[in-house]
Image (cartoon, rainbow, N blue to C red; front, side, top):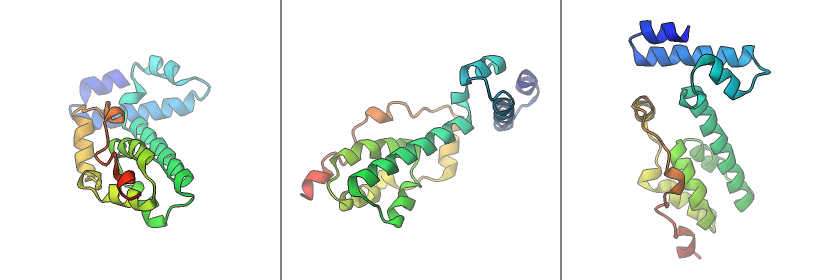
Length: 152
């Protein structure tokens, strides 16, 4: 079915959607098989699917929220909602940046920076379709590396 979709569906977005749907169905159908076994059966890599990327982003977002709650005991709902708007690259920068935060004001400042504003969904989709990777973001230095120290 996947080979047929690759041959017969010209639109790459539609082809990707079909592949993801089949992958999702297969993962439910073969719930006792691990990820690598299902990938081998399908001849695809789940890491390349949008579903996998969304799960990865959700997991990172939950981890960053957990770290922020541990650091500041509780976050106002408006900040939780704002963190929920960050894309994967921004979440990775925040995970690094929060190591330097001393006060919630440092988080608010970080979120106010232009590079940390919500990005249009269309931009994210275009980046995903072009195959642009977010690798290396975890090793980049956040622009506010010293923000916590300036407010102490």
